[in-house]
Image 1 (cartoon, one colour):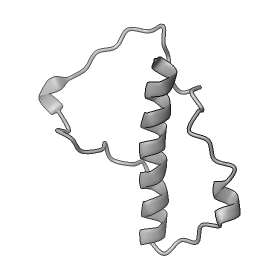
Image 2 (cartoon, one colour):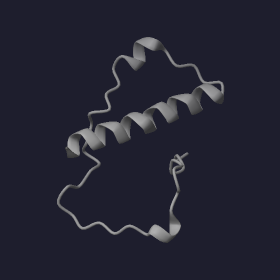
Image 3 (cartoon, one colour):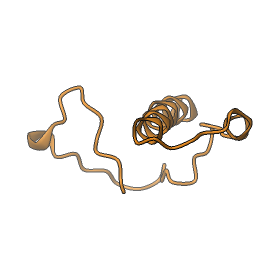
Image 4 (cartoon, helix red, strand yellow):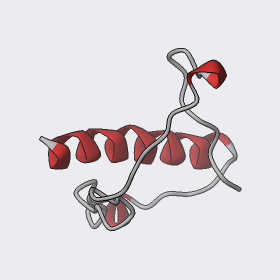
Amino acid sequence: MLINIVTVWNTVYMAEIIDQIKREGGIINDDDLKHLSPARRGHINPYGKYQFDLSNSLKGRLRPLRD
């Protein structure tokens, strides 16, 4: 289940990044998109402790993208 959650999370953020690049006038080649995969999970630590600050909730919004 963790892999599925990470894949959905990555898909949502990858789509947002691609949309932002297009909004800013960037050119995205369809052939390059074929090589993207949301199945990457190296940035996830399934063994650590997690703390969530619910007072700073995004309430249905995506967290800001990094520059």
